[in-house]
Length: 205
Image (cartoon, rainbow, N blue to C red; front, side, top):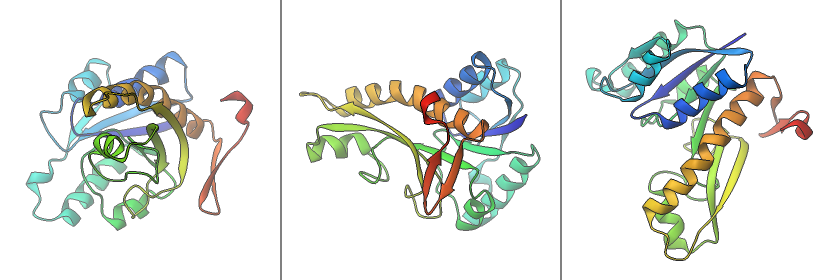
């Protein structure tokens, strides 16, 4: 039974999707905790309603990123995580933190990486006039949005799309993609080889 710790900063809709999938698909894992850097994050209420332990480590309480990350790491490790999941966690993490969780820290990014790293990805896609956009689940490394890709999903960019309409359509797919990637990790079907991700038994994805 693997322990999963999820980090959020707001509503946590991807966190909700992961929790529901873990329950409905009976993963050999449990959501050990949901942790936020904001005390008013709405996702904490969802977690508490589902009997999941929660914690708050407020970045505003720490003068430096290093001090915040050190405390966050301490709190996370108190739940003995096998996997740490970033689900709308709006903080750039320091290299020591990322290295501590190497190979067991996942993020979902709303673009087809390596395209459009960073913020405002949907508007970037519209401005670039690409035909396809999407989302990527990747292992986190010290370089922002550049870790080994686990899975991706493509979404067409439609005539007349705005940032809001494209974002909403991508988010629907994120809610399917992230639980899939996490389930593959939980089932020990992911391995990082030569800077890329190898998935075992792809016929059963």
